[in-house]
Image (cartoon, rainbow, N blue to C red; front, side):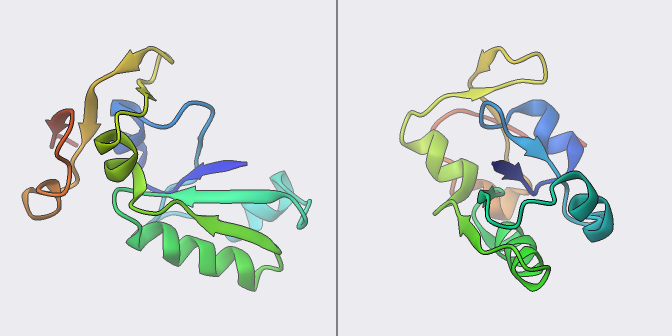
Length: 116
């Protein structure tokens, strides 16, 4: 299971194919448990660079999920290595939401988007 822990407006710009947007500020532990009860499933979390996904990953571990991993470097590193991302229509794109001007410096490949 691939979980995008960025905000929905970031996910709409682009995300890893087949990722599920669970958000960050409004992450709902109870809803997640109800929808994904298998605590043995392999879960990979990611965000822009890894900070928010680490926080959600820690929440998942506290909920009892046993196989949680954080994608090193997040979607920025993924795209920097020329891996594909898709838009809200599942079409490949070069656009990536760069979160902020400060964090956007870490995205060196692709088209940076900053809008909400």
